[in-house]
Amino acid sequence: MLARLLKTSASAFKGVAAPKRNLSVYIKDRPGADPNPPAELTKHANKAFYNPDLDMDDVIQDNIKLYGREKPDELDYSDVWDSTYENVFSPEYFYHSFFCGWIYTLETEYTINYPYEKGPISPFFRGEHALRRYQTGEERCIACKLCQSACPARAITIETEPRPDNSRRTVRYDIDMTKCIYCGFCQEACPVDAIVEGPNYEFSAYVHEDLLYDKYKLLENGDRWEAQLARNIQFIQARKPVSYTHLTLPTIYSV
Image (cartoon, rainbow, N blue to C red; front, side, top):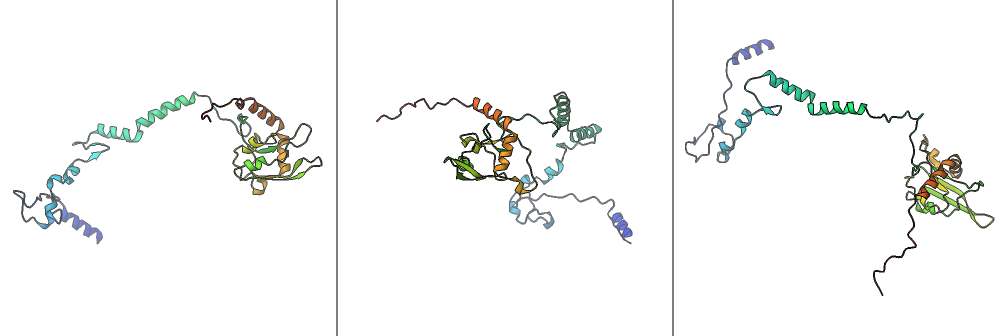
């Protein structure tokens, strides 16, 4: 029933051309204008504001652009090929990528087989913290708490007690590695190079408590990386700028 109805409707409208839209609606006071145009031909409710010279509907309809070009009067296979080539292959990107791909294949390969191969680390690298000892085995830390004061993240907690010789020693030296921002201020503030940031960067953990380092964990790190830490500190101190404290600045104001 539905197919018969659609067939009847199609046969009824077959051969009937769509009426061309008549937009010849003019200003009422313009010479030759229809003073009373039909309601179906009016574009606006207020005809005084309609000007056909400013109506761009027909111009836009007749000036359809296909892929950024004017619509051709007759379809040409060369136009189809050009449009397909420009929009599918994108030559401005394809040839550039193809050329760069060949150039990159001739370059040296910088990929390393991590973790079996590791790249070089700068002496200025700031990794896992460590507390160092003297060659005699004595702890370097003098419990001055300068590192705790210099830490902007408040990740260092130190507690001290006096020694028999009236010097101080640390009984608690904790670092919360989850708070640390690895700025290196603690290492710069230490006057005896006790607290340093070593070359180790593989110290991730699954539990938060494993990243709460105490004094014994830091001393263990120092014993493990002492040779590398000593070389790094020697390299850094050899390249520190010359001190200009002995120079006097010129007097700007005279009394």
